[in-house]
Length: 279
Image (cartoon, rainbow, N blue to C red; front, top):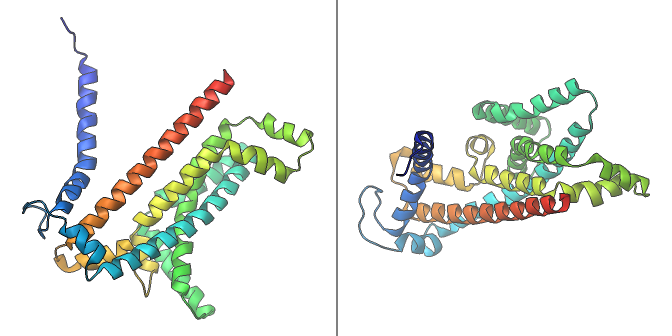
């Protein structure tokens, strides 16, 4: 007779409910990207009109302009955040005083737990003051948005890189110095390759956060659209969301899902390789 573990059954049911709550809206969105109805409550039959409108419709130029702006900001901000966050993580890990190290770690976590609207208003006022004191010509709004994204992405890079640094063996770095490497050479040839999985994860998280952000972007942007602000403008006033936005959202989710699965698989291979080396 089969015996059922009540705790495992309850845990499985709870996990299933959590996954359903998280992913059911996304699945619903993807399903309704294959119909041409303006409402997501009435299925009007299978159709690829949403994807046709996305790639060849009257608003396709505006959408792809916003997409290019979004990707440009995300990649530049993520690259800067990754460099700053990696250096910050190395610096925090090298601190000898435990209280100072704990203080820096706590300060790094403040932007992550702070209300996003507070950060958005603060950045808006800061950039407004900066433009008043140093009036400049050109597309400075793009630069302002990039620096705003760097401000909230960098702590997440530190959060991903710091645990990886703590797992490394400091003796390898010291051995590189004893063998004649300069501190920069030891950092570049020994430390950075060892913590690369954490750096990659920090970069990818920064890209995801940057693409996803609306509040801070909406407060600092002026004169152009990103995807989040464009979708908000299309859906404002309780208007039905254009069908091409459903297709775009479905494509973005699938691409990010495939990228994250690839990174997870690569990290798993790296972890297995590290275990094999240690054995």
